[in-house]
Length: 314
Image 1 (cartoon, helix red, strand yellow):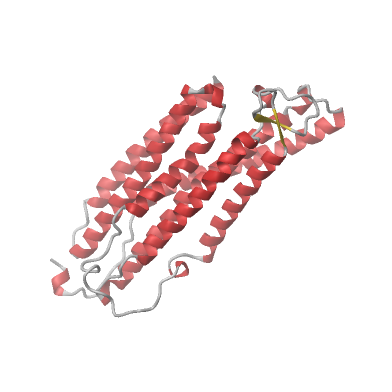
Image 2: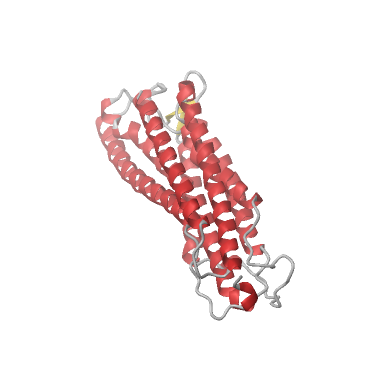
């Protein structure tokens, strides 16, 4: 029942994010006075593209929550996989939508032939943080799987740290291979979707007008930042869920029938508390990134331009 309550709260959060996305998209697509029409059009396309991506992700996550509520026998697996599946779906939608371009970029080519790379539109800190969160999530999933053992029904749901026979469910529930394998598969899918989305942002045709190059670069930086946030948020949430779920049986080790002596149970209790604290940090970080992704999806760059061509102002 407690798990169902958490799922219902998450469903309410998805609904709130859905409404916020639609509201911010409407504001962004309304445009601003005094700006050249090419930039206004580019912002509208970018806002629509970002909103569709975020709404797709939220819809997939909502479906995962509903599957979890309707199938308690699956334990928490759909809830675990929901953020990863949602982000992958959102990034795929982002990649498939038309890329925003300023004016006739598709028909006129910029004279610059300098190749564009990810480093042109992202900081080393952004790339490093994404690599760290991917690596940490993978390591946590592999460690959870290696430290697990199967219940009598064959499901990998208990920790091998307890010598006693596995009692699946309740306070004994541990994120074994039943959780870890799907997490690893979807993490790989998410990374591939992230790479394709980043490539789509970087390889979109450049503006034909030199005086709009700053706005063009700003739109690309905004897109790259959005992709990193959309990809990092579910990874952080998944990491938090893995650590939190792994911590609970360890925290309760002194109270459960584990086959451990008092000292070993106390040691696992301490380790469990550390994992629980790390899980809280990861979950807060993931939720913060999720909100930033929703807001940043429609908050497009406000690049000023100097002396636009007269034909661009119409």
